[in-house]
Amino acid sequence: MKLNRIASALCSVATIAAGICGTNQMLAQAAAPAMPMQMDAPKKPMSPPAKAEVTLGGAAVSIDYSAPSMRGRAIFGALVPYDKVWRTGANAATTLKTSADLQIGALKVPAGTYTLYTLPTAGGWSLIVNKQTGQWGTVYDEAQDLGRVKMMVGATAGPLETFVIDFEKTMGSATELHLKWAGVDASVSVTAAK
Image 1: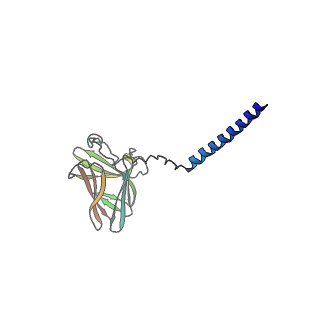
Image 2: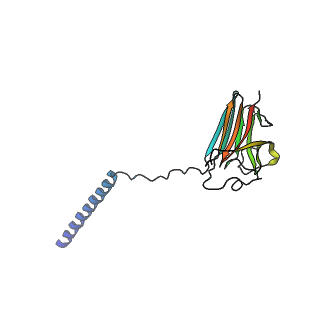
Image 3: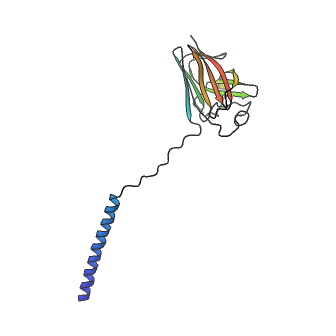
């Protein structure tokens, strides 16, 4: 009988001790500084979005595109084959928006939104203005072409790692549209209609 009471008392003490230890562990965990969660930084896209903008005689002209990089690859005549229509950038179609009628080279382009493609060849380039919009860059419907214009082709000062579209030599209602990448600079004149 005495033995049972001693055993029961020991069990009670053990239960209380376990409760205190458990509580102390919980308090210690609550008091400990939280370990910061490791968050992966969002990955930069391989061909990030880019924009070229110009104002011509009060008219807003913009081009939205994705800018691929060379990353050690041969570009024109290889990654971008000659004699095939190119999306002129990467990812979604390259989009031209203009609030005024434009003259791009010899092509009249009414105010609106268009897709720009190019046709690089070993002997020269053509800029294609296409009426279809909102498509992926590799989707090309020649029947939707507004027209094509020849571009001047020159060389950049050195190889450009990342594809760039920009406007240069802007004066009043006239500018030059330049497509530059991997040592190539293809350009065409752009004028806002008066």
